[in-house]
Length: 300
Image 1 (cartoon, one colour):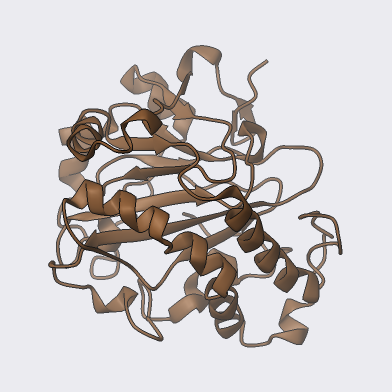
Image 2 (cartoon, helix red, strand yellow):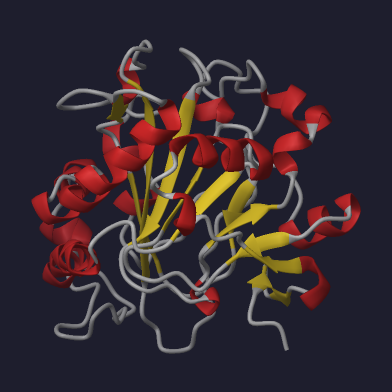
């Protein structure tokens, strides 16, 4: 039986594939850029010191333990309840403080990640200050989408880095890439120039579940059993989302998305600075992560 699920349905084995491992290319910048252009993503193992990743994870979980969402000493076991609203009524401020923890930021914006992006960008880079830290309880998933409607207001030379804080098995719902979607000009044409804030008549969600998309396009869903220190990188026009978190232990999946760009390119002020407004201007309060873990996520 398939270990991967989408909306409670097992992903047929024929539709599931392994991400291509590009770790061996890490010291070869031209080869990394060529692989990114060819595959639409780069998957590398062991980029970040696993001890640093575990420290970042522990820092995040400690904050959630303090508001009653994670059982003490459990390494991420969801309690099923929350006191976040009671103890931290400004949910946006709370989530910003969690997202700016020094151990976590040493992972998300550390030299290891920056060095990889410098190779991809062929020059100095800058990571967005506003990050998407996600703590997923069982039953959660993120629908398929391109990142372009959110991050290309200034230009589209932006890369997303997704990294797990700790080991994330396929059963815990890691990121999934739709194979060859970076070549789907019909779909990409629909999101070029689309700004999710300025055009509220449209939705950024791809509008179909991952199994249906893979079947209709004759392609596969690519993922992996991620380990602490791994990451995946892709541009604004690669379709991606996550699998269902259906692992039975009840432990949360912790991951983050950080966008990077060439330091020479214009900065989108929504995502940079001491108190970035985020996509809509509502700050960290607009994120799923700001919601108590016992509350449902919004779409995306």
